[in-house]
Image 1 (cartoon, one colour):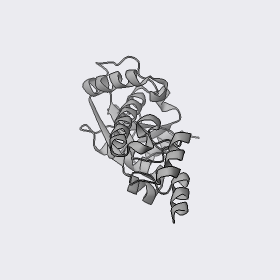
Image 2 (cartoon, helix red, strand yellow; image 1 turned 45 degrees about the vertical axis):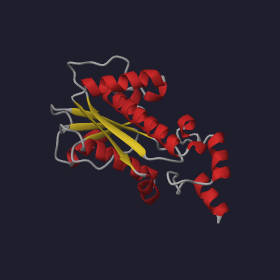
Image 3 (cartoon, rainbow, N blue to C red; image 1 turned 90 degrees about the vertical axis):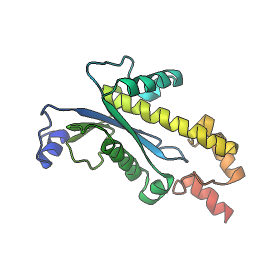
Image 4 (tube, rainbow, N blue to C red; image 1 turned 30 degrees about the vertical axis):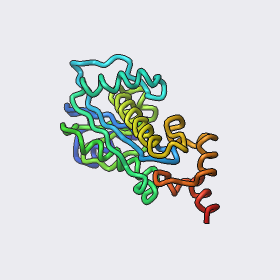
Length: 208
């Protein structure tokens, strides 16, 4: 049986193994109760290798910040994109994540010949694509994308904290921690909470 990447390439009438640029794609923020989901696409420059690339969750915040700047400086091109809270609630979090990924690829200055995506689902793209489980720990370009997406979203959460300090977004980054759930019960949901997520929906039902 042929692998998914070859089936995908054949469906598009393209060869997976043909020479050309490869983009790595990953997202951040599928699990939080608030804020957008963020995706990044990165085409690395083989002539400017970046040391220390890894799954963003395995790196310290300080290391992620350093690598964020290095990736932006050394990559052939990169793009960070989002799907909004409204899109998450309308489409569901999976489809919103795939939408953000597609936007990230579409936003690249250079068109990749093929794309490798972290996980087991693929966005609809006009070029061959391969889903790789734990790709952020296996493929440098996906690891770079995971770092860009994570740092960008963490910075968004700091901005959300400035607007809504009562929820503590600077600490939990929107994830359903006990502190976040307690703040939700005390203050109700704000405009950046995902109303389609069960803990937020429960708070809204109690308030009616």
